[in-house]
Image (cartoon, rainbow, N blue to C red):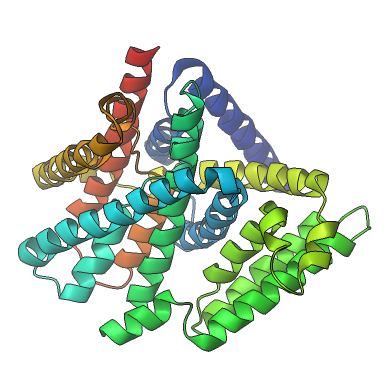
Length: 386
């Protein structure tokens, strides 16, 4: 049994790698293939008399790990250089505007159609409002430098802002004050601890000389994240600050008392950490979508309600996105309108939301259809532009 498990894990990673290469060669998003493989694996294993237990317990754990890696990878992609601040500000504004608009529209629909409370509607709406950087950034290859940088900044900040808003809503106690406090980092304590822990982790990373240094560093980051969640704080702020500090030594050097730390951050060290985080994200992302597909009932896709809800979501997403991008230029809007995929972050946060409130079963199908169809729209747009 041990060697069977090793064989299965190794074959899975090789398949995930092959799927990633297929994405690069054909433009077919890997998320679609991995979910599809998971859906196919379920009846095939059942027919062979093989029952995989514990899937429901594995999915949330993989989702939590994925959240940390998404925020860290996004922070490590953001460069706050003076000459890029205008583009960063534009992308940040677009991500924030989209989050507010889509969140308000989808929350209103959820409240009216599903009879949810205002808070429940807002929590359910956030996952559908976010662009998946895990899908969008690889898909931006082939665009011009300005467009590609915009996609990197927009999708990364969309993920980060969305996660922070989502958990601020969850811990808000259904009050505006609670939401604003959570959004600021769970109060003064969370914010102070986030800064202290981030500075400490950055300092440790600059002094570590052992051959093995990145895994203990990431283990410490995950431990602090888990401890923060157990204490009902907002530890994702710490993950965000840690990534931004490492990747923006020039800006960090301008902060009094931190210039000495900034001077010791090696670009080589940051580059190696980026590679490790990217590879871990690749493995977790592939595993998560495969398991998500395996845990999904094919009947979820057969519901007319699921298709109707997905159609409404996609029409709102693309119609509003074109209007919001139009002031940046007609050609710019035409290129990037379809580059708004939903993916890992949407699925992870939806599973969190589903665990908090009673939701109709067809919404499982709706979310996966939105992920599938937005990825398919992106693939078609890339082929037309090629």
